[in-house]
Image (cartoon, rainbow, N blue to C red; front, top):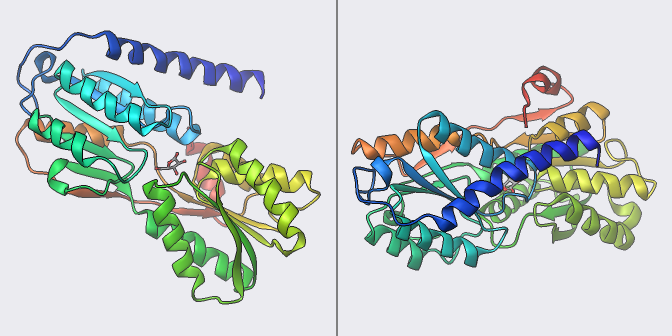
Amino acid sequence: MKRTRFLRLAAVASALSAPILFAVSCKPAASGPGGGGAGGKSGKVIGFSQSNASENEWRTAETQSILTEGKARGYEVKLADAQGDQTKQIAALKDFIAQGVSAIVLSPKTTDGWEPVLKEVKAAGIPVILVDRGVSADPSLYATLIASDFVAEGRMAGEWLVKKTGGNGGVIQLEGSAGADPAIERRKGFEEALAAAPGLKILASQSGDFNRAKGKQVMEATIKAHAKAITAVYAHNDGMALGAIEALKEAGMNPGADVQVVSIDGIGDAFKALDAGTLNCTVECSPILGGMAFDAVEKIAKGETLEKKTTVQDRLFDATNYKAEMPNRKY
Ligand code: AHR
């Protein structure tokens, strides 16, 4: 890793670690006005449960967006990083109840397993704003979900690939973390699109956990198993696609030319790879959710009713249009 990049990541990591410690040591706050009626210091203390703050650049950008927006609007945001462990995430929600936060922003790792703790949160009168991923739970247990349409993202990626390849070839699918909403739905959307092209076959489909290093490892194994039959890679996020590109290059293959690479997220490094010609297409999934999350917090505090879901709009970038967007990519 380059020194500047390392220093940037180290600065973010140290900025993230302080609120985690604070959240754990904070005593329950006194009751006061707030969205769910549970109080918190003057109703401006928010618990933010992040599934895995160091998973990839996308998640770093999402965490920063929530923390920065909260600060700008005068909130104290207590960040609890579950480091990829749903049990820790559930424990963090219970801590937030004990601390009397006025609302909880939750980015859930998986879709399942939330009902019992969400019932406890509801009983404590604390509203929950789901960001970036949904859960399979009774919708009355949360106030709103702010997220992209992951099925549509997968479908856009699939339709792009069908068109680009003429509907022929062998695809490796690098899936996100097992049980996560975007992994389930991006697979569904992509496979729906491929149903229109029987000549374009999925040779292997395996999880790379939304992580660059794991994406690379899985790609190395699939190259050994399928070698020259691979003409395309579809990764559920840019991180895994960038790992796969490294593996393809090391195997003497030519990503971007002999092997079409398509992925999802639209992070800065994906734009650099589009520019280098090693990545062919990325479907945006915006991590800049802080503004919408705190709009929801404030509407709830005013007693307004929210839509159950706000869908974040995504765009597709490939060689035809990435250049104009490149200077705007800050994450
Ligand atoms: O839930 C959004 C997904 O999760 C992003 O695509 C990914 O990079 C992340 O970790």
